[in-house]
Image (tube, rainbow, N blue to C red; front, top):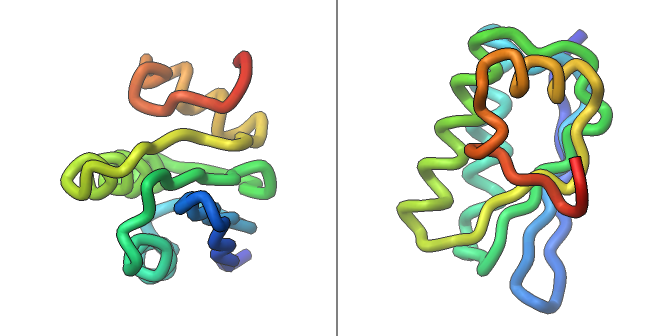
Length: 106
């Protein structure tokens, strides 16, 4: 399965990047396109909706960390608005929960 995305811009300067499908090394190019689209207006906050990500590999974790760094470089807030069980499991297994804050309680 491929990776697809939608970008939603909110009036408060937030941008929601919603991903669907597999997030791994093979879909990294699509993810970087999505990230560039989401950050082109330098939002005040980037929210990632990963609730429809079915699988995530180490390559997917790497691109998520790259997204975090890109947001930090732009002084843009960064958090997950939602994460699938697959994403949550990988983030927790790698001890990265502090890198990927989530809206609300985890």
